[in-house]
Image 1 (tube, one colour):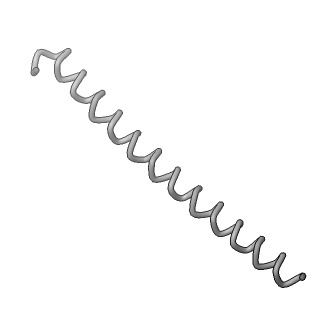
Image 2 (cartoon, helix red, strand yellow):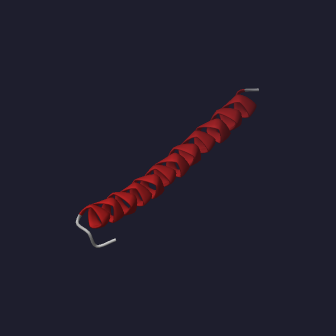
Length: 49
């Protein structure tokens, strides 16, 4: 029974780590998109639009 519980905890822990990496990647993608939007807004503000 202890092996089953240990395996279950290991699987849950691995899933949690994967989810954290995925969310970190999504955060970087959203930040990159926001930077591009900000750059374009600055260009338009300067009359380069």
